Amino acid sequence: MNFSSKLLENAVAEFGRLPGVGQKTALRLVLHLLKQSDADVARFTASLDRLKEDIQYCQECFNISDHTTCEICASFKRDKSLICVVEDTRDVMAIENTNSYQGVYHVLGGLISPMDGVGPADLKIEGLINRVQRGEVEEIILALSATMEGDTTIFYLYRKLREFNVKITTIARGIAFGGELEYVDELTLGRSIATRVPYERHVG
Image 1 (tube, rainbow, N blue to C red):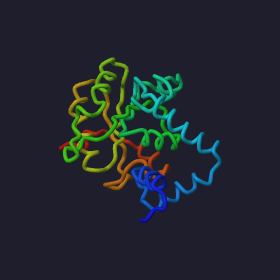
Image 2: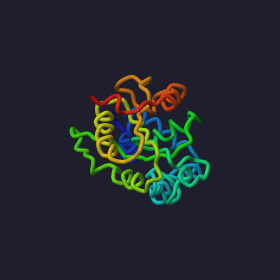
Image 3: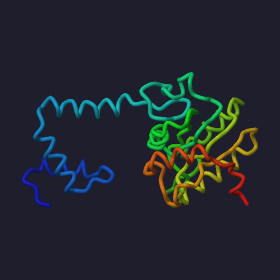
Image 4: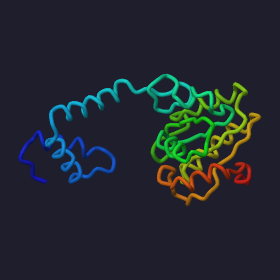
């Protein structure tokens, strides 16, 4: 693609680094910004600066938050004895949109994937173990994507958690193998949480 401006080319290249954004889409976004007022562009860039500078991670569940403790963990209405383990913040948002879960979460920050060089030490697993060791947790729902990486992570977590006096369940597989939670419709995801099953059934 030939550019009439080096500044335009550089901006398109930066937008093109975003996941799912090709060069044509990046160009369309940049040209859209050029048509906006200075105030609109300043507000847009300021929001990105604040996002990077001020965003925090909940010290309890590691979800993205504006404070050291997220609103979910801080809420007295949530059942602290029930923890739903997810891959990242997108999964928390997906489950919250079902309005069918009243427990709390634990965000791993990824999945075990030896091919990508991601091992257990790269995830927030020790934080989960520490929460269980307090003795307040009664059930852990392993709500991870139905992929090879998801199943590997679930099996690893099960082996780490089974020594504790806590119920371990997984979401019902109304979700096809290879499916990621953020793309599952709310009704299916809600039912999968509600009809969760003990993980022991999956272990031979």
